[in-house]
Image: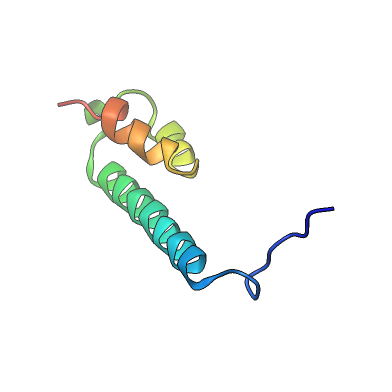
Length: 72
């Protein structure tokens, strides 16, 4: 049976990669939420509340918002 790795058994590189991915996800989400806050409803495709909820989907939500959710 394969053992599960926890934080204590993770190598330094893997731990650093996880930290970098977490920082990227949180940065994308923070940017999406800040952008949503400053835009009016007319400047967003669809309901703002749905985009806020979508921003919590790892990586995909914030990226989808920036690609599809904003009106030019």
